[in-house]
Image (cartoon, rainbow, N blue to C red; front, side, top):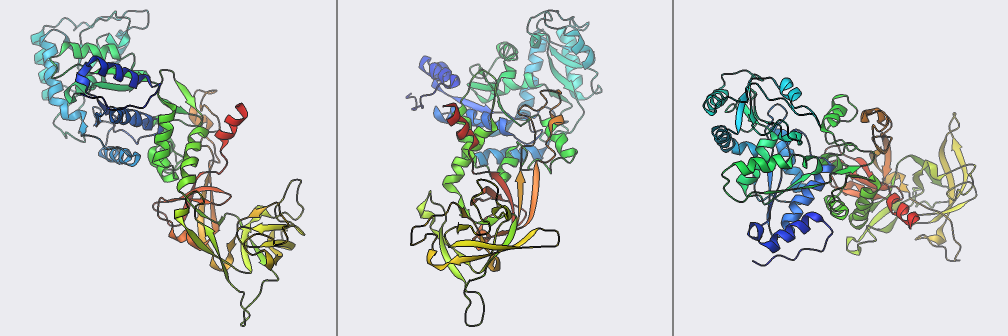
Length: 563
């Protein structure tokens, strides 16, 4: 068998697989799986695992399954299963098969009976709290259960009665019989089955005993024929138990190999499902797809391109050292991708009217309307141009005018000339204020010789401003976002990340003014608001745009300073 060409990488997982293939391990076959529990929506940390699991299989000409690790019916729902399938497709991956751990419940149970018959598992009548207390601690051996020496016949009878539903929740558990004094806590007679009279989203009421993660995981890998079971580092301590279970059983194929890598953590971000759920129940965010959430649903709604997430996760690679990546680095990838793909549009977020007092009128006294061709995307000439209407009344950003300009303010002020993007030079003459002293209108004159944005005499201006024709403006609402958490590592000082919530993480602007071309934006599409950043049109709410990222690349600037 000829091994596919794999890009050179310092990724230790790919190096391990490469060595396995060279040695003929697994017959040079590579099969992985992505095994999320369907108890919530996938988040940015899962994106790294998805890119790793599917990317490894793709690089080596193998396959990757999606396996829903649904062994906990009290927390799992069909809704989450659907969202996981959808999110993986959005990221650009297609599982070879979509399976459930619950598909293997019969085989797992048969193997449990096998271990009981071999004297390697027993039924314990103690409750979970007692079992946990008897495990001991690091450097302190555990205590054997008083039921540990039951005969295989007695244990088999009790296990079958557990399955038949004779006992209430928590009254019994099936445990592996390993070593209560083992230095690895996971090998101290771990629980394999617990009694839970709950309806399962996939198996209904067929079962009232459910396998634990440690019992189901490795065996599910073996049933599927997984070669390399890729996990995050928190499962490193579980690996001896993973191997122990597999070594006791008559497997249908080679024993899988578990490999662990560091999970992805970002600054100003949490990924705990429990705490993310609390943000929703407390009304801090609107739901799992709130654009401030680190869920793939939230990032997608905010306008993050799937390709940017894939490129970011690939670039940071896989290591065995936990670290926290700057969220600005991820945003740099997002910005880089959107710069290539996003159409440019002019939108005024906080409008104030600019009236050109010397603008011509037609024979009926109506202001003349001109049209200017503007480039849709300078990065891609194939995107062509659009026409923007221009007349004597425009909207500009309120903070683009200062009656008394501060130092280094080069935008519009009385007597100062600026360029209106792609149109004319204008000079402010005076401002009209309301009773509270707020500027509500700026009067200006224009130079007709500067059509297109350049002066024939070569004079230069220090500022170019965007604008929208008042008569042709389209109304829009815009949501601006700041970090959801004020500190880089939420909870570092107090121990509770939710203590560091940013109360001003979202600002909703209504009455924004956009050029007419904005009306052609598709739901979910991201466009660049010139001078302002990248904004995604909400998939459900008309003319609501979410700011994806700003134009300034903070990560690139930081790297330049370091250099």
